[in-house]
Image (cartoon, rainbow, N blue to C red; front, side, top):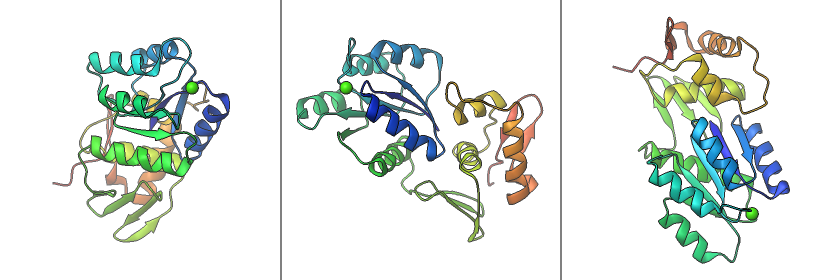
Length: 220
Ligand code: CA
């Protein structure tokens, strides 16, 4: 998924960006509130990781303004250990959950999945579609109960499509979900991943609507 990370601490920023990228997410990292608002105005994110203690414009200001503009992107705030009042303010300003520094990358990933699940109105941690069952926590996919091996990008692409069955997503939109700023995109990367997914799961699993995009047909 496409994630915006707002964090002024270079060590934390770098390790979160690297960890999430290894997990197959695309992560744009900015270091202050102003840059965060710029990014949010131009790019559609599926998750915002927001440090509250930022230079200049505070994370709380960014969050309050975001929610005033009726942007519903899931937000996880990151706070210092002793900042209980900040955590409360963050939740009241529209954050979905919070993490206290220092935090474990596995816990961050689990909280992101939980927030996303609630956001999508899903009770189960698994994404099920026909004979497919996907576990975002373990990156496992099964078809008719048999494991199917996917690369991190193939998994991310399939998850994006399965979260909105029946909704066509354009190549540009899929690229936006899969790649962050400055990451090199080969011109036919999405087609290559789609091709691989069709080969592994069956050609009818992903439909192409010419000039519109790709979709996973609904079950019914
Ligand atoms: Ca900070």
